[in-house]
Image 1 (cartoon, rainbow, N blue to C red):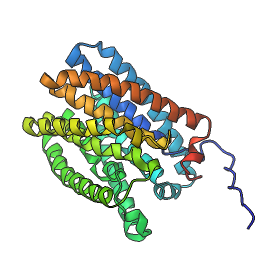
Image 2: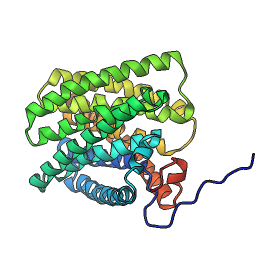
Image 3: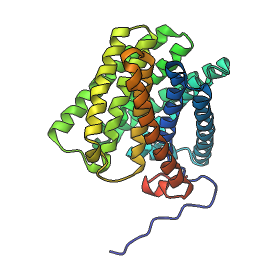
Image 4: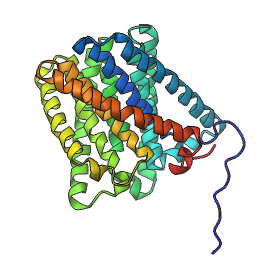
Length: 321
């Protein structure tokens, strides 16, 4: 049988923008918000966090523009991207970045930030509808629970965190309760899978996503003054973080890939939680923030560099418009 080379990408700007850029951008947003929090915890100049957030906002808007151009060229490309794991993770991260952008803008343009928040809710609801349709009509392997389900379905908790910024406390509490149940189901299903079968080396970085809901539930609980819940989340997150550190070599055995973007946001969100709680968590939060910075920035740089060189779309099998 003769080898058939892949079809070349048609001429035109941004026809094969890889959604895999967005998990790393999401992690950079989380890092900027954690540095913003460090201004309260350690008196770090506020400009550090704001500079990171400003740069990431521009990067996200550019990536969003590029992907929207791809989508407008051929709308069904969205469904094609969602059929592959890096694409599902990337599209979900793109949507979640709206919530993070809302929190970034809140101190400067509250009305605009609220609009971005509602746009995020609308976009994620649409995404969930498309994903549920794929689950019901697609092949059986797409019904397998993966850590990416946290991004797709539990990601509303980031919207809950943003809602607390605008004092929408009832909405935040409702989202907190619903997403906690969803996260518990995903954690249980994933634990059962890990006990029954080994995780392929290439997919192990995605396991880090399991840490993100813990940190986010803690942040929302702290904002809602549910201090016991927040402290519990902080403690469990510390145990989970310790496990990831101990198993770092196992997690990264397959070498660098775009899926390393999964390491970024959980690390930054955990640092943010510990800094928010203060007290005995203040120093661990500072250590976690430094560690997250040393982790998130290089991964973000490598992912964006792969995109700039045109290699990321090929490596992640991104759909072509």
